[in-house]
Length: 110
Image 1 (cartoon, one colour):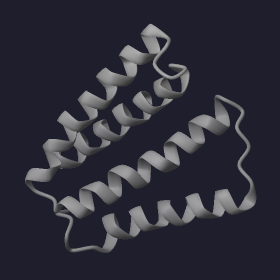
Image 2 (cartoon, rainbow, N blue to C red):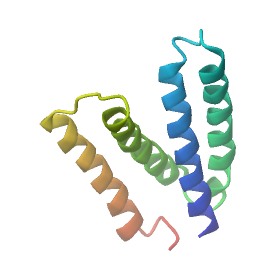
Image 3 (cartoon, helix red, strand yellow):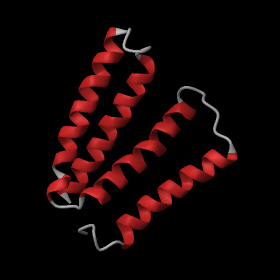
Image 4 (cartoon, rainbow, N blue to C red):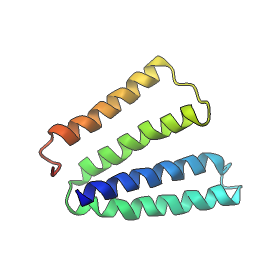
């Protein structure tokens, strides 16, 4: 369970860092740039813990899959970015893949 908490925290840090990256204007704005760099460093530090007990491919699939879905939601809800039906379906498939890994795979310790 501890590994999963670290993984969720790593996803959150990555989403915050990616949101700040979009606001950094190519690293020309100081505070969004600082949040971005610190957020990614924190995300990778947090990601090291689940890699001790969960296979690398599974950790990365969950981390990147949830990150993609959450950053798309942040862009849609906060930045007013438009998601068309194919984008929504694609994101739903990514989320379904993460759920299948977590609920049914024996590679993830439950």
